[in-house]
Amino acid sequence: MSNKPPIACDLSSIKDNQRDQHRQNAEAVFEAISEIREIEDGFAFKLPAETELIQTVSSFVARERLCCPFFDFTLTIPSNHQPVWLALTGREGVKPYLKETLVPKLDAPIENLT
Image (tube, rainbow, N blue to C red; front, side):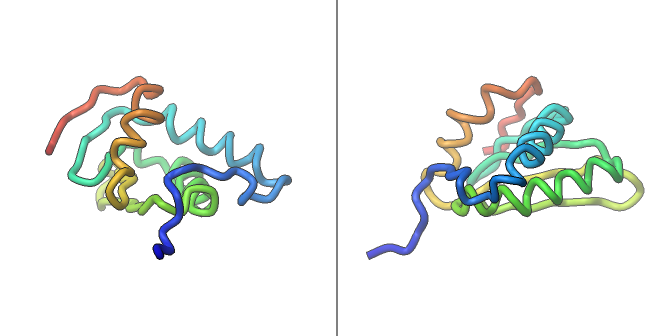
């Protein structure tokens, strides 16, 4: 028997009074993406190195991990104000899920690194 969560989002895992803010944070993050990189087990999203956006990304990840516990998140914040990268990855099945549900909604070029 596996204790892996299903690959399906459950917004009820986020408190009712936090869902609107989470949606706003998600929209801000996904609208700021300027490039998408397909990586081995998911996708990496290029974001501007703006302090307010980095705070928004952190808040997004803090809540998204509750409703989508099958994602692994990696936030890379390089020195010298270089672009920030948010990677969403996970076990087998996560990459196709992202490719089907999220990537088509984003208005950014995709670079295939796999």
